[in-house]
Image (cartoon, rainbow, N blue to C red; front, top):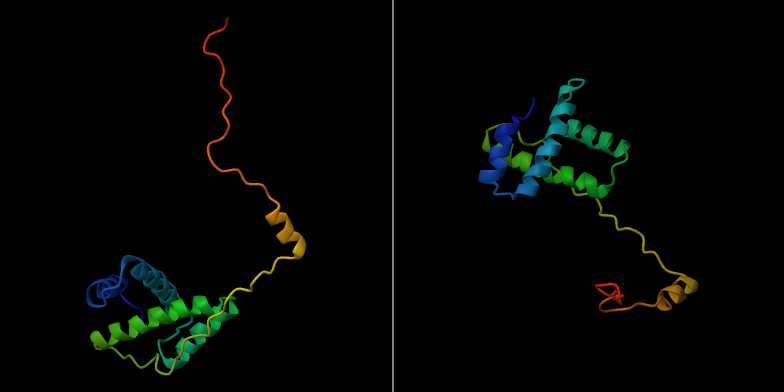
Length: 134
């Protein structure tokens, strides 16, 4: 089963009331899901969704990126319920643990270099040239 992109877009915009950037992200991900659904006879079931996320994880996507797909799936469930389609394919899925980037700590030498950097504020010095030659 493929998701009708135009109908899903309309649903996200009108019934869900998402802003333009959220709709754009969902539409990008629904395109990826539709492509996946058309390959190898994949289906929109609990096992199929697990397989879809496993494939994304195998491609190297991090948890924060996987959560953007989860966001799309939550709206897809609402869409399926609204349209009278099977919507139990995402039951029991929890968000992926968010990861934070490592904090970079400066060495004493780097801190000293930053502190010793001279900064000049204001207008730069202008060199005035005579307008006419003597």
